[in-house]
Image (cartoon, rainbow over all chains, first blue to last red; front, top):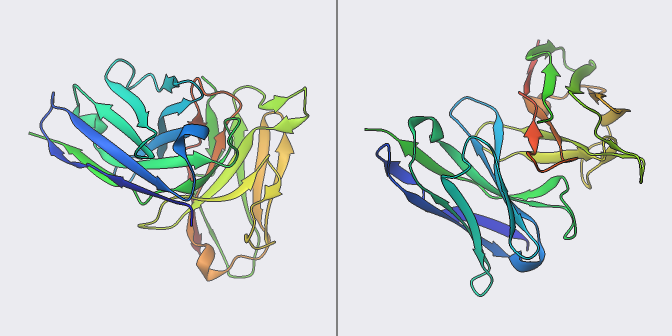
Length: 120
Length: 114
């Protein structure tokens, strides 16, 4: 069964750091485009980052320079390292996989999300 | 950035009636080399992750009821629920995947029962 399970969320103070994990099963992250999408409480969806190919990465302007996406193929896991966290980063963070392995595509596989709360 | 604008923000439709949601992109998401519109629609129910409904603007995802349909091309797109059912109460989002710099979603449309 194809599945994504996020973990690592929690409460952190402004300026702090957190690392989110997205563990995949049923497919290999190394051969897929993998992305993070977040949703602030009561708000819409916001794309955060994507990784693909030979570690090509892209970021939303709102997180560029603060967040880093990476993957560990041996653990079949994708990470989101979040530094210099701000109150406005508070959100439910989803891991998502596009439909095809060779291009950016619609996201057909989503995890349940992990909640990040940035507050003093 | 490609800005995705959905309308309306919310709508209330009677059971069995048609619901129509609009999505407009600030630039075309039609890729001329393959004549495909890089546009998807998602449904999100409370406490759940988004669920893919439609991709390539009009291709229904496997298992999605045929009362859901997508149409449009270029910059103007529509999601139609032909006969609203109680289980269709949700927030619906459009998304462009024409470019990853950045990928963008619409603001969402909340569909309720009148």
